[in-house]
Amino acid sequence: MKIKDFTPENRPMERMIEKGADNLSDAELLAIVLKTGTKERNVLELSNFVLSKFPLKSIDNLEISELTEINGIGKVKAAQIKAIYELHKRFTKNILKEDLKVYNPAQIYSILREEIGNKTQENLMAILFRGNNIISKKVITIGTDNQTLISHKNIISYAIRENAQGLIIAHNHPSGEAYPSREDISETQKLAKIAKELDICFLDHLIVTSEGYFSFKEKEMM
Image 1 (cartoon, rainbow, N blue to C red):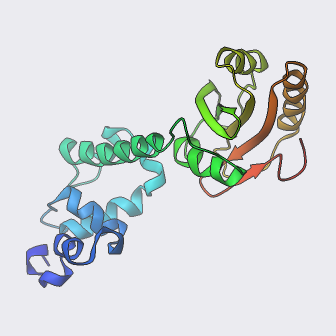
Image 2 (spheres, helix red, strand yellow; image 1 turned 180 degrees about the vertical axis):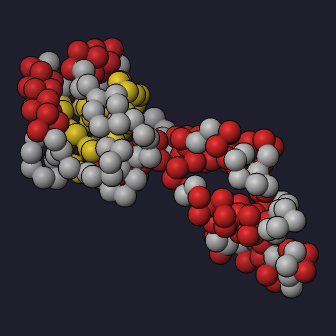
């Protein structure tokens, strides 16, 4: 059945206008972006097929060529999908303001989940503070699918250069398991010692996945 044959209240665009975007499914939202389907699938069926093949959390790591392998997804539609995801990422990043105050690991996780939670390589980030205010954050190193280097020198140099009072580091586990390795624990202890000697408050180390996080502070491992 073609979308035009649906009753108006069941068409994605009309449902968004009437009910609001938050009442639409992922497939309905994607259907509005794609606009048209194929002879074999209407746009809603095509959207469902795309999401069954590529879950939302995987889109960041897809190439345009991978999306165009789906019948009905040409370069234009693939670019539209990637553009929507990229806008979401940038919006999430822009939530971070210099006057944002953070009081617990869950808040840090909410900031970093979209940024590194779905990465297929381990990314090590440093987040710098003055008081409870985030003043800066950046990726320090990028590793493999199961390992990254905790570069004490680069982390501390960054903190000193930005005149930070406090420091949190975080890295993702592409495996989805939010538990520290033996090396994670030993390197965290080393960094804590170096930071203390330089009068920088080492606040926490978070391991981030798309589904959750592990906080050294919460587990009293700092």
